[in-house]
Amino acid sequence: MYQHRNWQGELLELPAGKVVCVGSNYAKHISEMGSITPKSRSSLLNLKRHSVIYDSRCICLPVLAKSTMKPSWQY
Image (cartoon, rainbow, N blue to C red; front, top):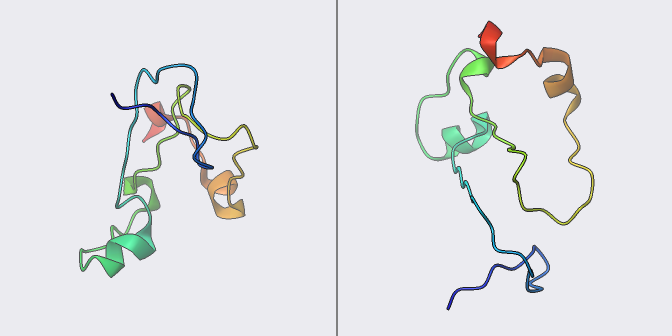
């Protein structure tokens, strides 16, 4: 049976309700894959759900992301 692990490989006691994996969420990675990078930064997907599994450290946003953040209903 599959068991969820944290980034250090330790077993997680609670089952995950949702795991979302996105590969092309940054312009550099999209470019590396040979795809066309969107001109609008709001077109790039960056998803952090309230149910995200992480190692309990703060999720640090880049300065650019902090200065361009808008509520999703304004896009």
